[in-house]
Image (cartoon, rainbow, N blue to C red):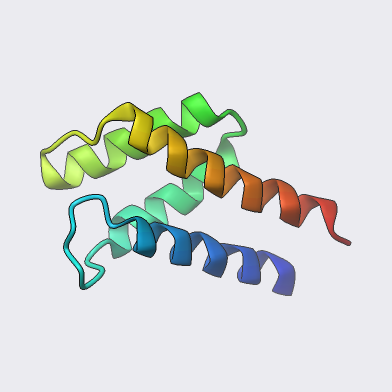
Amino acid sequence: MESEMKTNLQFVDVLNEWDPFHLKNGNYDTEIADTIQAIHELDHPEDLAARIQSIYEFSFEKAIPIDRCLKVANQLLAIKDNDSCTI
């Protein structure tokens, strides 16, 4: 349980640093929560990237290029894979 909490905090850090709309003050709480849920549901970078794109587009009514979403999806899935390898 503690490991999952730590992993979720790593996800939050990556997503706050990503800041796709350059808000600087991290107004992404809803999107981050939705994205973390998606990370737990999805294992393929392309699927996660598409979900991330739709989450942020729904909130901000602006699309993020899919290649940028894919880059962050790969980072997030690497953290997820890393966590599932530890005991």
